Length: 266
Image (cartoon, rainbow, N blue to C red; front, side, top):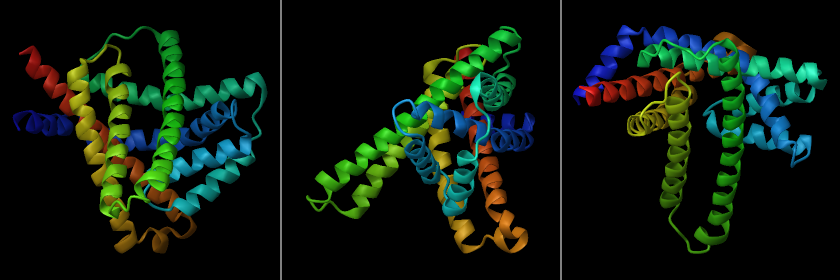
């Protein structure tokens, strides 16, 4: 409990809400280049159209609201992509990697890491992390598709209660989110973070993220007025707010990790 209180206090000391807003902005500006890269990565084994649909469907499963609007808008952007060739790919990778640079900057501040490996090595590390996270995202598509087949072929014929199926699906989502946050907390900063602390922070962040997704979905469906205020831009504003809440969760998990590291050093 003391560790959690320390994490919350450090969140306020590091201006966590302001940092989360910066991460949300980075996410919005880097989302399309990252989607381009993941679609291109999946295109090695699938057609471009199939890869686009799979990636967008998985993104819609993660984002709790405005699924149809975002799927249609992002799908049109991907289909109309005009960058091609080596120069276009280099520009695409450079823009896509900026999100990882922002995440690393926030984590280094929280963990107190100051010395970096140099600009060129940081860019190279961002590109490697972009590739790894892209593979992880595509792996999540395969895992959730396999779960759907297991549900259809095994669980449904055995008449497993829907509540149990939803619980299994939720556990799978939390497990994937924990892996995602673990990779970010342990490998993104300048120095390697202890695995135990990184896992504890990742598990907390994954649980908070699932709660945030359900709460945000309930708010949009029951109370939200984004459509009434912003009209056609309501989906974009909703995506930005979800990115902001996700940034808060990410920073809270990192602060919890840093608090555990500090206690173990003491």
